[in-house]
Length: 106
Image (cartoon, rainbow, N blue to C red; front, side, top):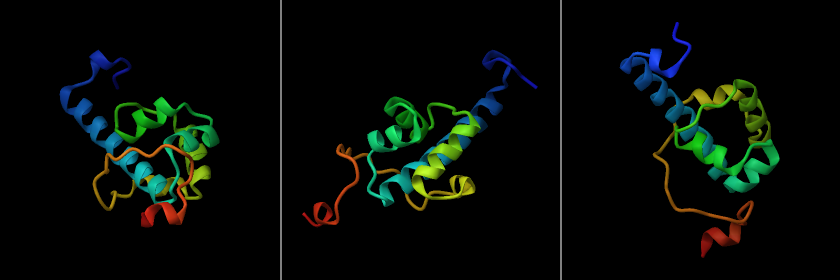
């Protein structure tokens, strides 16, 4: 069992990256379904916005305890993060808390 990144095999590093991307993509999908900005999710979960960005794009690992904090904010069970996202992430930024239904129709 490797304890440092340089002790991991390339296959293991790739597999971990794929898993981070899967969980992060699902978190992003659930966040967008609720019209919640990254900033709002960060504030409500106690994480930084940069950490939320890193998690959503599979670039950062997160302590598993923090997954429960994110799940609580999103109102889902943490196991929902392990499901495949329905669609790939859309990279159109939105800043401003929860989106109103009127903003989507414009």
